[in-house]
Length: 117
Image 1 (spheres, rainbow, N blue to C red):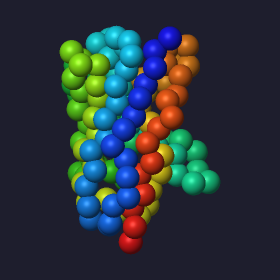
Image 2: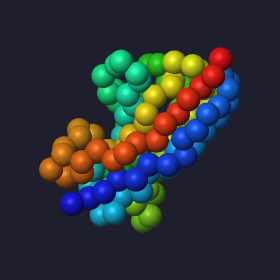
Image 3: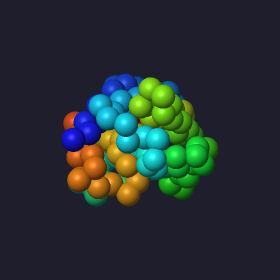
Image 4: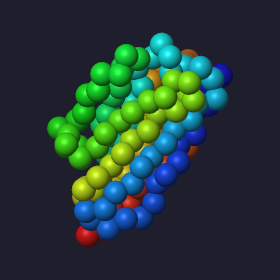
């Protein structure tokens, strides 16, 4: 079964930047759309950025213009560049396929992003 390992989170002040990375143990990237999801305290997990197998991208309105998703199929990695961070971006961030399918790739441990005001 594919394993997803996220990294790059941390504590940053509002207005700062972070770059998240996700590595998959298996070759799921080449044929699947990939996405970054987040779960804020007390809220449901939501999809914030998506990238198709061909490289087309989509973003949630809340992050549009600030976040940028990219992928490297040769390295089985997907990244999320986060700029102009806001306190409301505080959450645990996860990568996975879009749509998510536990039969393909279960959720990883995620990476915590905390934005202080």
